[in-house]
Image (cartoon, rainbow, N blue to C red; front, side, top):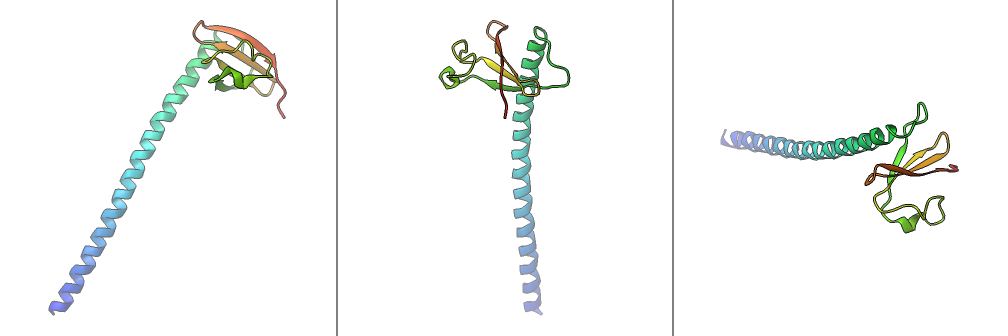
Length: 120
């Protein structure tokens, strides 16, 4: 009889341990997803802010949302149409459907250049 209770106690302890382990794993995964979601929302807000600023001074092509890149090193743009005009921190809006790129400088809220691009 005692042996039967020992086996039942061991099974209960194993089930509780497995349940707590999975609960902890799910908890930490949920926390990581929440942090990623917050950072994605922050990036979305930054992109929307850039788009709204530029759309007030430049008429966007209808039905196209630009791809946005931030210039981190102007030397990397060597050979591009506005490589000599770009500065660190400038935004490049790429309109792939119409083949245009817009160089925007947020520090002075001005469009620096608009260039045609070829996208393969």
